[in-house]
Amino acid sequence: MINKEQLFKQTYEQSKDKIYRLCLGFAGNNSDADDLFQEVFIKVWNNLETFRNESSINTWIYKIATNTALLYVSRKNKFNKRISYLKPEDLNLEIKESDPSYTELEFKKLYQAISELKERDRIIISLLFENSSYSEISEIVGLSVSNVGVRINRIKKTLTKKLK
Image (cartoon, rainbow, N blue to C red; front, side, top):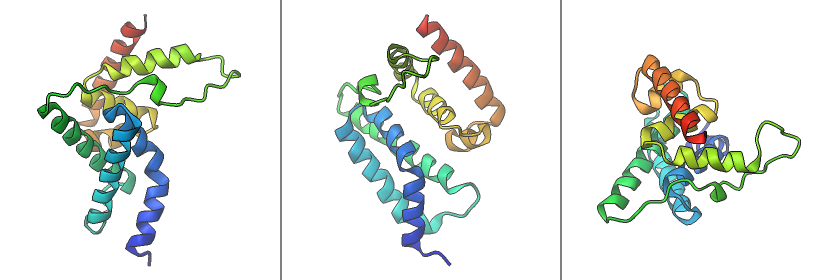
């Protein structure tokens, strides 16, 4: 039987990179993303016993992270601070010269376009980039699977227009 500490360590290792990218997308800088990331995993630790295995633990954590990030944005807005969302330079992308499909400039344009999307759409496209299934995305954002599909198509069209 796995104990709480072992489960937390295992879960943390599996999801830390994905959750950090989400936090960075909402916070806009590494310092605030670090704080948000810590807040997410404190909530995960404090609520680990309430996880009921009705979905994957990664989906559960991503939902906690999304809700925490949305609360973070709400708090920042209440103080009338301008929020800078995901900046390409914060991504520290390693572009491989052998990858002919994208250049560094194209990545920057893509992430700039994503940063201009509505919050829910940024979450959806981020989950899609993390290879989450439509049903996982549906569970996390609280939409039906078919609605997720429709939104993804709209997001792709919006991004295509922004990139032209």
